[in-house]
Amino acid sequence: MARRPSADFRERLVAAIDAGLPAGEAAQRFRVNLRTIYRWLARNRQGASLAERPRSGRPPKLDPARYPELRALVLAQPDATLPEHAARLEAQTGIRFSPSHLSRLLAKLDVPLKKRV
Image (cartoon, rainbow, N blue to C red):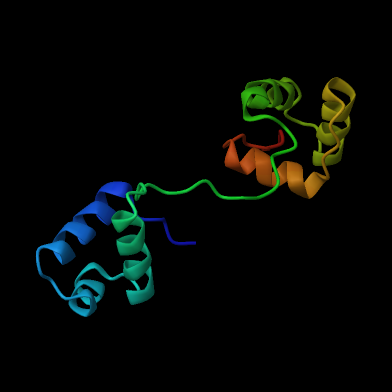
């Protein structure tokens, strides 16, 4: 997924259009969809911030403040399998993770699951 443009980028684009750059040319120069430019212009003219709005979605099962706890739990027994880690995490926190979900979360936290040889 592409990164979302920063508020600074959006403000520079709107300033360029306000300075006389046609919207179509701005779309090509800044590599932004024309409809997106019109949305940003409307937000700017209403006095709203051009900063990224919060995204909707399901909140995470495990609060990000508890990620160090998860990291310590996994690193305490590095030879355990993902189902074993999931069971220990459920016993300790009461939160149930599937092994695949736990795998994605550990990859996000950059926790290796290297087994001993």
